[in-house]
Length: 270
Image (spheres, rainbow, N blue to C red):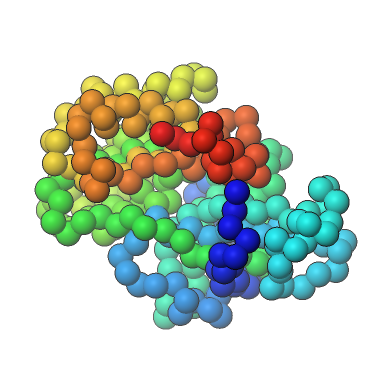
C-alpha cells in the first residue's frame, strides 16, 4: 500500500502552447511551465510526470490533494492519474514536451492529448525518474515500445558521441517509425509486431541480437513483455546496477488497476 506519510511531489500547472502529430499514434504536446526550474538538470532521461485528471464538474482548482479527493469522492468522480515520460525540457523557454500514445477514444490521457488546444491546462506532479546513459558504459542497449519511446529518444541524445549501442523498438504500425538520427552511434531498429498478443516479441529480439555483456541496459514497456525481457537479461547475466527495467503499462489494465497491482506481490515484475 502507498505510504500516507510520504510527502507528495510538487505539483505544476501545465499550459498547452503547441500540439504536433509526430506519427499516427504519437502526439507531442508542448507545455509552458512556470516551475520549470523544479526539473533537475541531472542527466536523467526517463523523467516522468503524473498528470492529474479531475472532473471539471467539481469546480476544483489546483493544486489538488489527490489522496483526500479519492477518499471523499465517489469512485466515478475520483481523480485519475496517468504517468507520462518527459520528452524534453527547455529551461530557457520555460517549456516541456510530452509525447502521448493515442489510440482513438481509448483511455483518458490519449484522447485528451489528441484534442488539446493551446491554452488548455492540466496539473501534474513530479518529476520522477532515475536512469541516464552512463558516460563510462562501453555499449548501450535500449529496449521498449511506443510508451518507452520518449525516454529512449531522450537517452539517445545523451549517449556519449561515438559510443556504440542498439535500440530495439517495438511498433505495430510502420508509420510510427520516426526519425531518431543524431550524433549518437546507436543503431536503431524498428521492429514491426503484427501480433498484438505476442508478448515474447521483444524478448526474442533481445535474444537474437548481438550485444556485449558489459552493456548498460534500459528496458521498459508492457508488463508481460518486460517480464520476458527480464528473463533474457538474466540469461545474459547483466548486473543489476547496469540494468534499468520495469513495466510502464499492462495490457488490458487501466493505469489505476496497473499501479494497484504493482503494489501487491502478484503484480510485481520479479
